[in-house]
Length: 124
Image (tube, rainbow, N blue to C red):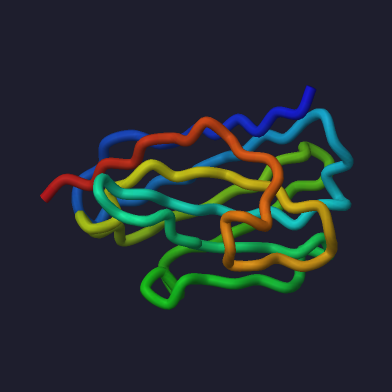
């Protein structure tokens, strides 16, 4: 059974930090590009950050670059998203996703596996 389980979301004040985790199981972790998307109420799903199978080809959505960091722990089959200096407009459900293949794409339809999502709320 393929599973992607997110954790680490919650309520944080503006300017605060959260670290999201995505624990993967049921597939060959190192054969999949991984990514984080987010979706706010009434908004389209937006790509936040992606990482290739080599874990050295990385993308950040321009508004989060310099504040967010994606990383991967192969031994733990886990992808992380460290989020610093959070803003109220970044309140959303954050989803972890996996794509079979070397490269990431900033397209939700490219990803075959999805987690349930974790709520991030940034209060002002």
